[in-house]
Length: 384
Image (cartoon, rainbow, N blue to C red; front, side, top):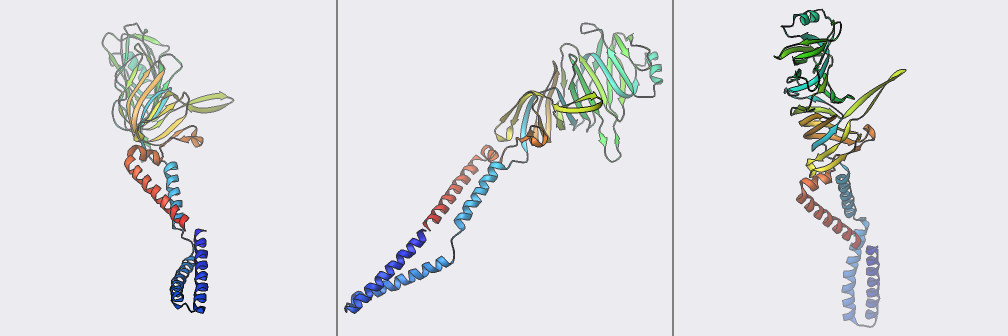
């Protein structure tokens, strides 16, 4: 509108000079007429140039610059970074993960009671012939149960270091029984040959231990003496289940190690005519810190679903005590989501949050240039 107003003003001024030129020429005032003629020539060139510019159409550059700026701002606010460094401090009822290096899973643990199922081979102490004869009769999957005389007894059941091959799936579940936990070990699969590595577990006993094994007519109490005796056990291609019942102090410490495929869910199975399987979050509480964006905190409520993919993830500590699994870990993750599956809310930082935390100076200069460009474009368009 401003351009059209200026064009009309130029045309009116040109008409005024033409009228003045005609009057001065008619009155014989040739000097004034010559001056008017010079002004008319200049105005004619200006009007012709203005008409040529008008034919070229409007200048869209300011509009395009503003649109591009809005697109960039939208991307910064809505787009999320693909990966983020995070630290976890969680309390859980169950956790599942896959080992990613050959290190011991747990240290030496003293137990009141332990049961192992899914075994294909059991080697009792050599100095207990009766047990070796019983085991030799078994040609099927075995299960063994050890029970001491109680938390104050001198009997002793110990599980030494458990070392698992890379790729073993580990599930740790808090059971309904006080100080009871279930350790589920799925052997590592080898895709090429569709085979798996056998899992080995040792249990050391000392003193009078109540023992339940196949082909024993009933649970039998055996005095193994003061020196520890070793039971060597081996699983097959299927899951190995270890039920652990702790003595005081009630705690199991897991070693720090690299893991992957972390799942924070628990599965419940119901049977009423037909089997019904339900899954729910195993989170009892805790906090996730997004280290890449200034340790931004995400507080989790009990039962709140949380899921993520591990890129490079390390278990710092895992402690089982008083019915709670306390996990501390850190690493690089992706697809961090809060909520149930497809309805979940992404908790990954936006590009703007990442720039504010990691590149504040570059963001400041970029914002200043953007504001300058937008204001200049708007001013240029307004003047036109």
